[in-house]
Image (cartoon, rainbow, N blue to C red; front, side, top):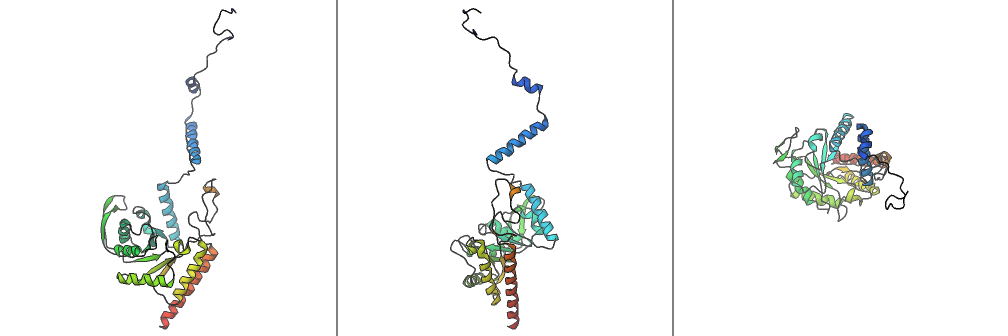
Length: 296
């Protein structure tokens, strides 16, 4: 080899490299492989972004209706919080009682909805503890309304309601503190009377009334039981956050399969043993009230 070469002096030769297109055409990806890769990429991306496969609303609606159907078939009445004005069309025929939450009790849309549903509805006081908004909501729901909504066929239409007379307020506490004691019940009664509304009051043992500590719920329930046993007839019900086991849990990194059975994934709850004790105490208080009323 002559030293006169200024290029490739120490190169023995070049072999052509197959192009990516040539190799892909020789060994094309199958439809099954393509599906596997795409699905895996999405799942890996969701893991990195700490997402799961939630927000499948169509699936959720089916699960919700099936669950309520099974429960009512067993003889168990169910209640729900009315979070929006559309989903009730999917489950309302299975609901015995509904609640308007503290953050939506001022919503005109929710008040209109409450005026037309076929079951009793409770209005919670505001997150700041203001009971006036719940009383206003109760009064608004009792009146007829005309508004836009969906019928059971999913068609947007003008809905005409007759008003819902089976409404009440729910004392759930607030930023200013709890409101489950006798003085709070008396204040609520006076406000309802002033507005010309029935003095029907439910007390939420959780949220602001428990200072967001589930272990305080039995204490709140005991205070309610004491009032009932003394003859307070304005108290018509309680709300208790209860589950099989106490406390709460977050969705683990391993996914839904790693969740502990019977433990809440939302608000912390009292366990079943404490629930039985609370309900027994309330039942005994109701019996005492009945006897007291009979004697009077």
